Length: 69
Image 1: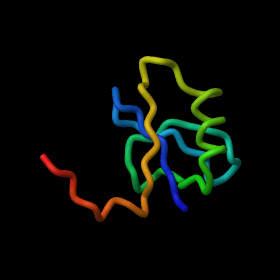
Image 2: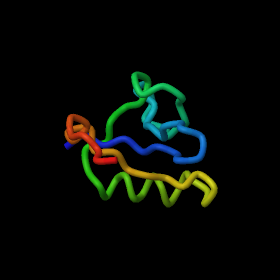
Image 3: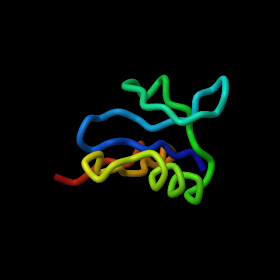
Image 4: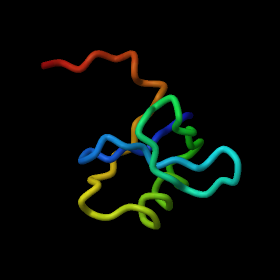
């Protein structure tokens, strides 16, 4: 699986830096490094977000599905 963590408030993505693995906020999806498992996502959210971020996990394998309006 491939997941990214996105702030519902700012739109930024919380992502491990590709060079050193340290979490950082990036604005573009193309700059975000995907996380392989939900446990890692949960730990990143717990350690590196504040409540105002309203963090959400996006499953990149499910982007093809349309959302009913």
